[in-house]
Image (tube, rainbow, N blue to C red; front, side):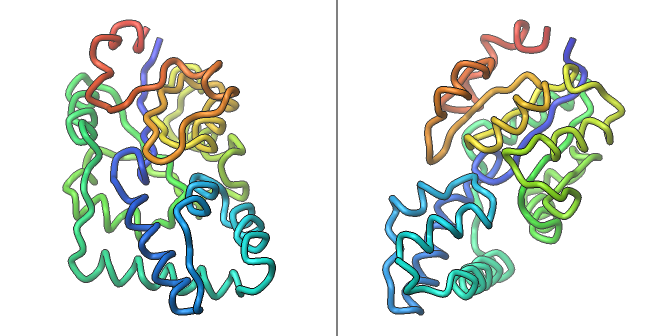
Length: 219
């Protein structure tokens, strides 16, 4: 039986992916390059190191990828800390409230850094719903490794099988599936691969669509 619900943040609760894409475009522009959507799509949900290999290969070594990352991070920080809007994905805030009001202990498992996670959760008024938060700073291996979800389950004092997770990315869903959790996928940019589709509970277009399945989902 499901006792705990774990949410990803970027691309699942918050519509940050289009903002990140804009930041990478601006960063590349500073370096005299163009960062196409196809390249961003290929990197969505990947660890920084894995994405760096794809970016380096795309630019054939003509771009200092570490510098590109620094520019993009600066762009994102400037955006969020200077009043830039970050929207909830459809049904996200309502889903958080729904599970909280039903008595589930919620957690967040994000590949982002803690400072950005805390700021964005506070900005959007949902920080109080997440007594347990795990970020990239709490683990040594990024998604798709299951470590972040295993650490989160440990913080919840729960078995992975007692946890339901919501993810948007292939890497995030793979991480949670491999950890032994029930996983629902709500993609924003990239559709799930065969591994995820065959093992996830279900793929939804929106968190608004989960409620007809809720009894089976929580069984």
